[in-house]
Structures are given as structure tokens and as C-alpha cells.
Image (cartoon, rainbow, N blue to C red; front, side, top):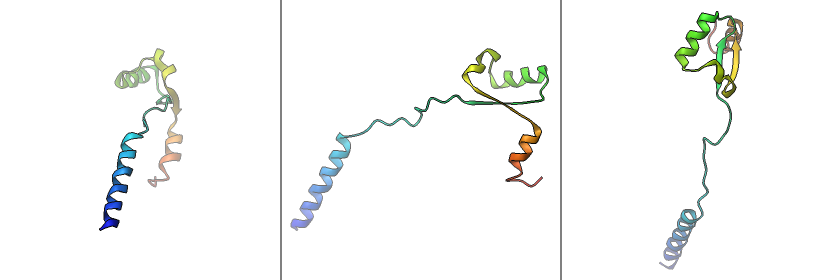
Length: 84
């Protein structure tokens, strides 16, 4: 009976300690730029259309990590999951 009371008291203290000494954690605090992937061979018209669909303006490119991707790049990555 005494052991049970000590166990309950210890558990209560641990829970109280966890509630009192909480650490603020923000999983979204990483300040990285989002990627913007564009086809390397897009015409000016196609590029404008893609940017329009993504609601991104060219003067906002500094807010993104802009990556130009070719069809060859896509095949090199995709072949690991899907045989072409």
C-alpha cells in the first residue's frame, strides 16, 4: 500500500514537472525558401502560364529556390521508382 502511494505521488510530480517546464517548440521555424521547379525548356508563354497557375510573379523569385529541371533530370529521378 505504501509503495502504491509513493508511485502515485512520484507520477503526479513527474506530470506536474512536465506541465510546468514545457519547452516551446515550433516545427515550422525553419527559415528556408520553398522550391520553385520550372521546366528548363519552357517557352516564355509556357513559363508565364505555369507562374500564373502557381500564383507566382517573376519579381518574387528571390523568395524561392528556383530550380530548372529538364526531361532528362526527371527520368534520372523517376527511374528509381518506376521503370521507364
